[in-house]
Image 1 (cartoon, one colour):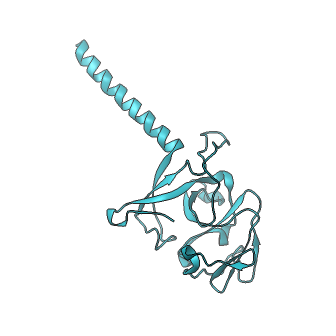
Image 2: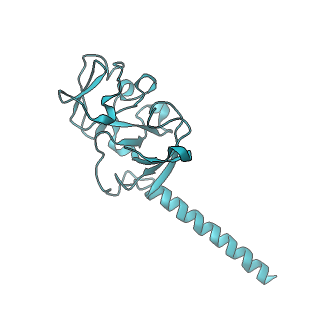
Image 3: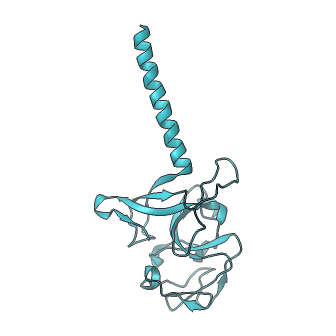
Length: 192
């Protein structure tokens, strides 16, 4: 009877330890997300599964406003997972491309992004036609990004709900940098 109990106890201990390690890794190192919408097509498609690095920008300490220092700050054109500022969407994670950094002036003109008066020619976004719309993306309107905030756009401009409509995401709401598509297997790729 005691041998049976000790085998059961070993299994329970192993399961508890494995669960604790998984929670620790998910909280501080990386998280897996499944893409639900077409807002980032063609880079990400509905059903794609991605790894998101929390270490890049620094993981948040659960149940506190604190963040552990990461390797670097978010960079322009990173693909980022974050919590949007929309009250009704605060329980969801969004994934978009970071366009505007704190202090930048962003304008969408003739389908192109202009940052601080210069048209963006980076190949990651230069071939995309960005639709002018919304309070923060109206044609002819230059939007200034406040300190501690970021401006995000989806690569599929026509079907993306993004900063053009709801404004700026707070630095504290950034979850991590999307680094790799790992599913489906034929779409395995590093994300840029």
